[in-house]
Length: 103
Image (cartoon, rainbow, N blue to C red; front, side, top):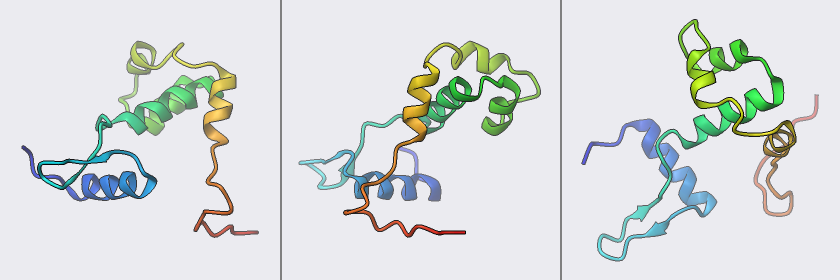
């Protein structure tokens, strides 16, 4: 089993705090069933569906100069309406510890 890096440790902590996953009965450790790039791939899919700009989405994902990866893996997986729903997800205010900044 590979040693988790700092990002993986922080991501696992975030998933646990959000209630995603389960406690392994044998080891007592918190486990999740998320693929390592699930959030990144979701962002790419919904960003492209919302914006319709393959070069911008590719750039944000860190792809090489071409948008071929985007077209091979992200295009046509979500509708604009689903992307709008995805990007409008907000924590519940009653249970949230998020501080709203007003400019």
